[in-house]
Image 1 (cartoon, rainbow, N blue to C red):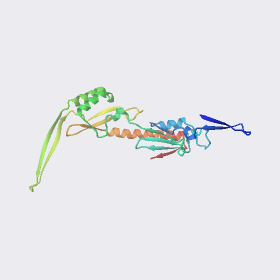
Image 2: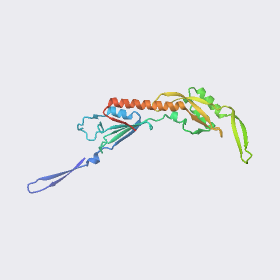
Image 3: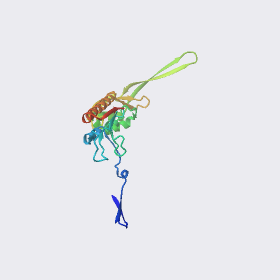
Image 4: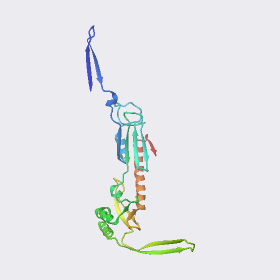
Amino acid sequence: MENQEVYKIEKGVKEVVITHKKALDEAAPHNIAILGNIDSPRKWIEKRHFNFDGTTLSDPFAHVIDEESHVLIDRDNMEIKLCFNESHPLRRGSVQGKLILHPDFSKWKINTGESWDHKELSEFIKMNRSCFETRQDAMIMSTELSNIKVKADNEYEKADDNRGSVRTMIAQKIIESNIPQAFKLNVPIFKGTAKTTFEVEVYVNPGNYSVTFVSPDANDIVSEIKNKIIDDEEKAIKKIAPELVIIEI
């Protein structure tokens, strides 16, 4: 958009035209900052123009992959980040991809240290029976937890050193319990991945019989899947754009 001012001047000059245009910084686009799934940087690289030869682009504001681009890989946070046009204030941008745990996995609070009350857990299992290998397994576990039965025996031990010191110890021994020792889930670990079956161990709090879920299998699977997905994305990016600098942080 532009405005013109016209001034008529005598003595041989017919008119002077002054044109007003918007400043460049007002017309410039906003910097790009995208957060998506782990494959977002690769998809951006696949579709965007490459300009590694140093030629001048016809569009001064084009967001391209060029010699001022790099990729950062953060395995601990399960992230891949593409940064492009590093030094250009008007074309700088980033596309960040992140691996996200699937809700069907994270809602079980596995390996988090969080505990479940057995009544609360019974209702939760009933409403999430699709996460089990079979619905029958889920309903059996839900029923048992809703009517928890624990038979315990306390053993007392007293020690006296005849010097005024005394020590009393109480050992609780569970004789019978219907709380399961373990069960199996069949859920996706990360968003966009297939379902995986793994065992979950049930730890029981001796004070109130609340339970905590622990799964070495799930921990191994998370690590293996995470590294495989990130490795596959890194290989794909190297194949598409071998000139890009890739840095592990």
